[in-house]
Length: 132
Image (tube, rainbow, N blue to C red; front, side):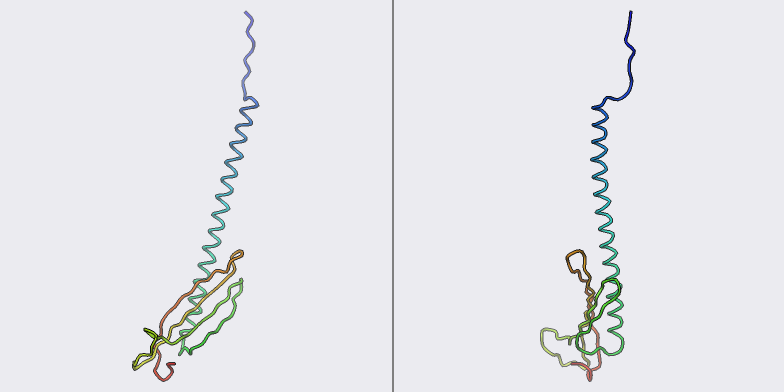
C-alpha cells in the first residue's frame, strides 16, 4: 500500500482569514487608544483651567474687590476674565449694613475648533462704603 505523505501547516485561506482578523483587531485597538488619549488631553485641559480659575478667583478676592471686568492671558493658550458685580438678590438693592459682590472668574481655551470655558463664582461681603 502506497500512502501519500501527509502535509501539515496552514492553507492560504486560513492564513488570509487570520490576517484579516488581526487587521480588524488592530484597527479597533488603535481607535480605542486614540479616543483614550483625546479624553486624557481634555481632562488635563479641564484640570489646568480649573486650577487657573481658582488662582484668578483667589487673586480677585484679595483686598476689596471693585466692580468691573478685567482679563488677561496665561501661557499655553489659556485666557482669563474676572467680572465683579454688585450682589442684588431679587434684582434690587437691599438695606444691609454691609455690601456684597459676585465675583466670577472664567478661564477659556481653544479645543480643536471650539472654545471651552471653565467658570468659578463666589460671593464676597465688603464694607458698605465700598459697595456699589
